[in-house]
Image (tube, rainbow, N blue to C red; front, side, top):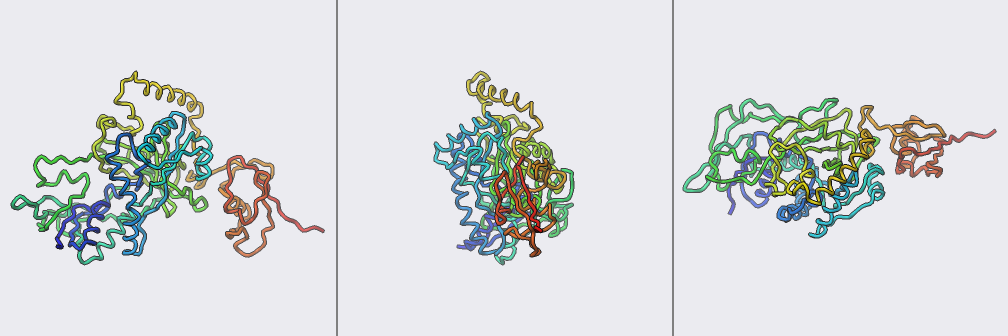
Length: 494
């Protein structure tokens, strides 16, 4: 029997609930003053049930892993209805480490993951570099999580919302739920109101960056066009779904004594554009462990990348960790300096911590630092970890300014500089492939087969590290730091 259901909150969770209820024939009213403007707007969108697994989180894994495996089926259904992009990418995750202490920690976690049936494949540094030329020889280890995926929450939310807005059986209303209405011991509706002093949020469903060298907040606004400020209306319903995240405990009329099993986890992300000649910078999501600190780099289909390296539980919405995220990302990912940067401070909801992961409120440090907090300072595991970190600090103090992973792109000049030897002379080039180098030195665009796009004659031959590179392979042949390149120009004899 069809029912009228009110869904409170139009983030990814609320939108997915409303969309599925419509597929099952129910009438839906969706309430949110500014859809997809909270955690769904800020999140990187990693569906990382495997690589984000932590010790003794099997109960969470029992939900997250099957959900991740259902995503392709749900996305296919959504794409058939909308005919547009959904933001989903079925690509795995590579987790890399910066030093021996990080590698030891990752190996220990990998053993635990395999013991409970997760598919993780250990990679040597050379194999990781073969899969992603982005990596440097300085990485100490890596593993591949093949069951991980990613989705762009902004694009996904836009797809859900566009389908719901076109559906006559769904009423999308820019109102904030204020109170649950009760009668005879059951919830029978919602009292909703407009949010005063709101502005329209205009770039909710894309990854647009801005031309700036500053770290700027990308905070959403509300929309209050539906009702004058202060007015409210009562909406009757058969069922009410509460899906507005951290705002849910503030809803009036909740059952007395109800404790929400969620906690706020705040973080900051940076979105950067990759120069055209470097795309794709990455073909997989990269997670890193850099001297005990977690960092992630998520490539998007539009050429942007999302970088994150902070986790806070201090309740502050402001952008705080953008520069620290960029600093950490230069080790396990691309350099984070340059134009086109936008940071976003936001929050998400998480279940309560396992006792071994709890920390004091306001602690501004990632989970990796809390691994042994429950142990005595003299516990052997902690002593070994400290010894490894002291050795690591000694090595890295001497090369503090050197990145563990090569910062390929997005430096202030708009590209990246690589030192190579061309015809016996050391020089710095802004090119990542043989084709890009030839194009830069000749000033002519090249077709995919290496011939000039203008149809003329090029008259060049290229050897890389004493091996001739066939013209048709120029685009697929990457340049590396310190490479020896010979460019020979053909001349007519007399």
